[in-house]
Image (cartoon, rainbow, N blue to C red):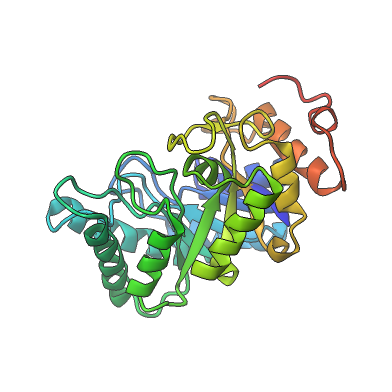
Length: 308
């Protein structure tokens, strides 16, 4: 399994590639626009070309973007829904310009007056509308499994399966799993039996072939908390053994594991420099040691890493 990180695009999208290379990443996730705004600065053709050239020369794969957190594909008809569909089309445009494998997106939040079935149908419809506007694009839309906070859609595999059914199993739709979200949502990937049951259910309901990328995050909260709080690798309720199990699961060997753990402000996103982030180095090192060892202990994985 390839190991990478979400890297800041502060200073331009090519900076994200430079940061990934500096940290020895094999895969990359980035924001292709400001994740807290509906409308972002356009990517100029020359910048997109430089980005593609850098990715090609670095060997990074896969490279995906994460969509804006404002997007709510489950929203009922109205301004937010219209803006969400426009925004996801823009995210797909950016992904295509940068030759990304896909765009990771949270399905959205169910409105108080709606049922979860209504929300799922709206997510599927929004995807169909977006794809109809861009019928020839190559970038995939990667539905991220959620932690289940509040009325978020997609914390159960059955809900993601229903979204896929609503887009008639389109090959342009894949899935992103997050280790923190799985635990928070109540999936026991920590025990041997729970891990086997979880991935058996995923394969039965969705299909391993739909899985395109894994977000590697430990969890500050225990199994079933339905609270999305990321922790450094091996320092939460997911634990080193679970990450080791994932990294050595032959069914997942073709995938990439991308960390979204806490970074060092001012270093990770320095506007003019590409700097090493000690927190990224710590978490990436922990995963590499697990991948490269058949039986890593907690002490081994964090040797010389320091505290979080």
